[in-house]
Length: 256
Image 1 (cartoon, rainbow, N blue to C red):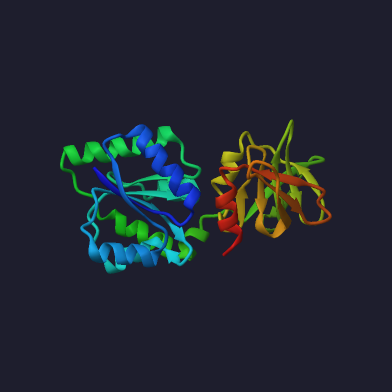
Image 2: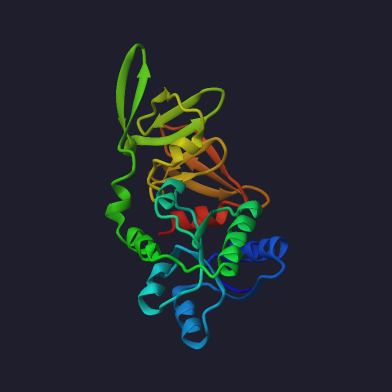
């Protein structure tokens, strides 16, 4: 199969190419397109590939804009930092998604799914257009995000607005830090549960321990082996590591 990657982060694109070669030797990457402009030019001069790997948010717009100009019939595997629950509602046969940073097992399963679809000569359902419309309408997505959390302490319940939460932090206990410096114990079993109900434009999964609010970031500095160290605003006395793999995603998340 011939494939094209639409991805504006060069490190992520390189890793994707390497992973594809590792898990699917029969998939040949024809080109890597780093922007909407480059993608438009490519599709105007080339036949569509057998498979398309596509990031959602590019430096010059949403990749879904390609569907307004071109009628693409090839299977699309979306590579995205959007939360899993939002994608799941629109997941259809022949169109899969990969959460960044991409895991090889997930990549292999997605490619196998496309290969199986082609062997059975299945068609991509029209729900792809529904997926496009969903992400093109921020109001639809925002309506599903959690607006507040109920914190139980001292035998009482206290509502905390999501926008007032600076950090979710998992240690021996699970904590919520607010912008005014409160450190509250909140009962959740995994950060994945929290991640699914947060607006990805506002919150970022920094590492295994922390999800940070974009408005809590005071400064960012390099921290060895292409990692980043995020210093949070006062009165929070926290520093949060961003891994090498997530550093490009974090930069894109901040720079918009």
